[in-house]
Length: 412
Image (cartoon, rainbow, N blue to C red; front, side, top):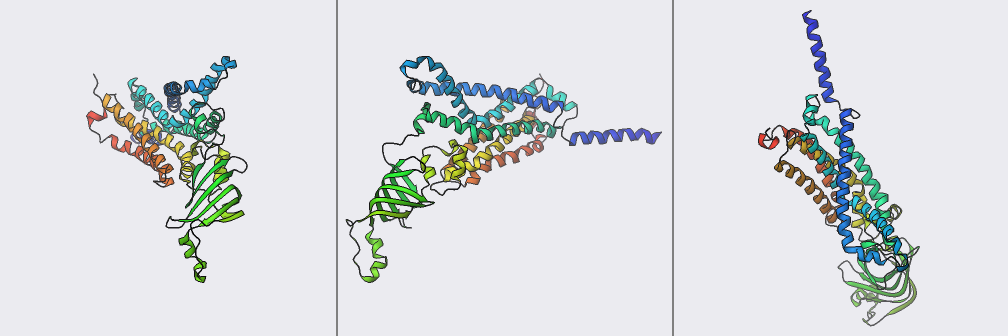
């Protein structure tokens, strides 16, 4: 009888240990928390988008209304609604990681102040199991971020550019510019007017070919330049000038041939040269890489052009931002479990909010550095998400070692 009396508690202890170790992805608490995250994230998104659109309309309302013909003033309201939807999509894709963080943070505050967290912990759920809803919610937001960056946001921005709405209507206007542009093509420099098309061509072309020491080696001037194949361009109706220093070092010097003077020109009807300019990139060179539609972005992946640091960076960031959304969701929950599990205070709330904003700012800073070629594209895209994900499990280990005055607020 004594042995049978001790069997049942052992079984219960084993079941209790298993329950604390195994996550419950479809349990009542998980579903309840995910719905809370969604609700509060939606409210945060609405508030931020209203503020952002109000500021944006303050600067561009006059230019936006100028697009409406005088005979169609009745369509002004629909134009504003259309612009707000398109511009709001752009803002949402840009701010979604931060919105996700504060949506989860708001839910955790409500969970603490309502004493629901205490009830959940008394039921035997561990802090690690409480991270599961944040993980699932982060995956949902991450998939949304991926869809926004790949399809929805580029489509919205290109629509505004084609209709000349807002700031994108000015920056990304697809019509050719009436003045020449400067391009870097590897070690060469090109000045020309771009003629968009399939493929794009150049007009009134000046090409400055540099040697490895970045001194002028050859100069080309042509009326038209057309692409032939990858890295090959045909110059039509122009002339070529070679540097006297370069000519003196060529094979002509072996025969004591006098190098051409600076005024000497060699005219040509057609000439083929190597030039690191992509005609696909020329059609969209005014558009930032983050706004390129998926078909153009994929086509540029097969091209060779320079500088390409912005494009290569966003080739990584488009995939790393969804992971960053997951990381920020887990960060908000981990910090909340560590600092406001039993009560809320201004210091604790400020630390959590500041940590989320700091992580988001560092992510944008790394992206900016990667776009300008100051850091490797892999570092720009993946460093911050990986660091944030690595920090989250440490929060659980540090939770019990925090001073009592920082870990909880005494009951009044």
